[in-house]
Amino acid sequence: MKILYQIAIIFTLCLLGEAISAILPFPFPSSITAMILLAAALFSGILKIDHIKEKSDFLLSNMAFFFIPAGVKVIEHLSIIRSIWWQFLIIVSVSTVVVFLVTAWVVSFFLKIEARRNRNA
Image (cartoon, rainbow, N blue to C red; front, side, top):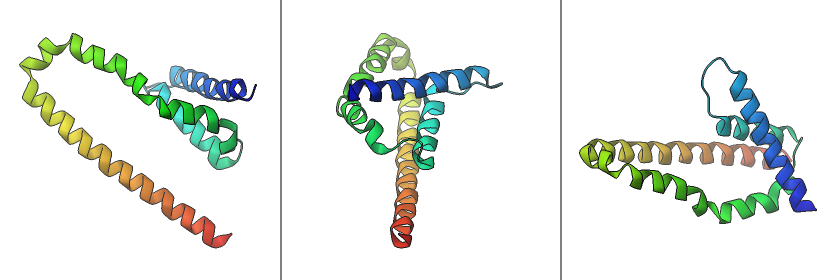
């Protein structure tokens, strides 16, 4: 029953993300909206890590399955990619470096927040 409760929480956040993205006057990915809602719920204390831990651990351990559709689409459009391979390579390389840098900055930021919280506690 606990797993169903955790799935319901995650799906509710996804549904809210879809609704918010649909009413925004500009295009914004609903998955990002749902992640922002999840972060806000966790930071505010509305949700605790224990409320979603088991299901999120399951999703993270099986994350490779989420890349299958993207891989299939790349293979489907391989003829297009072959004609612009060097531009594609530059974009992939630059975006990978940017994602690494932003991820490192975000992790560092949250570690500092955690350290401050532990010092004050």
